[in-house]
Image (tube, rainbow, N blue to C red; front, top):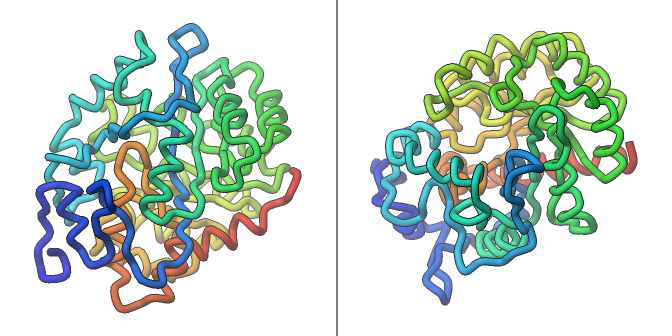
Length: 345
């Protein structure tokens, strides 16, 4: 095991042998940490259709199991790697075949990424709340609206919208999403085909700043994404927004992946930027905490790409012997950030 110098596990079920977890009555991994703090996951998703003209998914459907991109069974884990690199090495092509299936079908693995399924897995792994990140394609806001409609009134699921600055109606999208209850916005360079320092993106962020709500960036790349789009999310593209809008709270999703030191230094200089550390290996997490301090680090999983147990195990290992830092990262910092958001922007 990691604590004894081992970084390799045969799959997520073997992670359940770590002292933080066990198997429940159905033989599934669950949290078994005594005096566990309330956990808030700041990076999750639901299934989404590519457009209004492709088959739609039922976000309220419960299924017997969740088919994560990084399977719980028979996918080897190298805890020294960023999770996206591990996934790329083990089953990148299988993941993209599943995503491609959503273009023509509302069946398959992605159909299991639903509201009742995430709540069921949150209960099993001790999660109090999850932040859901929507991403809208150009010219549409159906993904954000669908997320918001399906999570309305559920205090455990906090939705960030995904307005696309290429849309001719992006300002209308912002107003509608905030009216529907969005608590932040996700900016995803290579899914929105623009780097974060593009004038269209900066104009959208400036308008979003009037809401008083945070901006969460997808940051960096790890080889899992299409090569032609990787440069759009290079770390140097994020600094301009931080400098232009010091009043906005920013969150670096994935903490810059393998470029975490540059991302953390940039975030630290800005002062109003958090890093979300989903996927970071324990040794990198320790370095992130050294640079950022414990108060601006947020736990995230990127569920349903990864099962909750994988990023949770990495945080548990990295914070062993430091319960105060563990408490802050797993939920304390997130609860404080969410509590400070305007009730109605």
